[in-house]
Length: 142
Image (cartoon, rainbow, N blue to C red; front, side):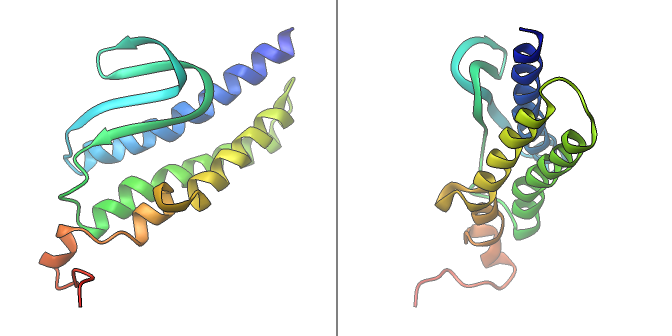
């Protein structure tokens, strides 16, 4: 039973660290955060933060429209870096259930990078927005 609790808490910590990193970068870039979600099947809400029962995903809701390229990279790419560090630490530390948490962390890490149009990698490097136009980028319309 103790191992199940460790695995659950480790998985929640992984999702929490990932989303808190997005949140921290939003604050650093002076973007107003509307809502933070950690986990699925929301159990309760504390101000802007919704906490769910199942640690499989999360999100930070903020005004995405006015981001510059640097802000997008900072906000979206910093969290997968923190998730990668969390994977490394779980592989180094030996505690009850650490391999299950490491596997969970790896799955979420790769989904955040390779999860399609909504992935952190896609949002950080491949989405054009109004901030790029100010710096001489193109709108993508030809």
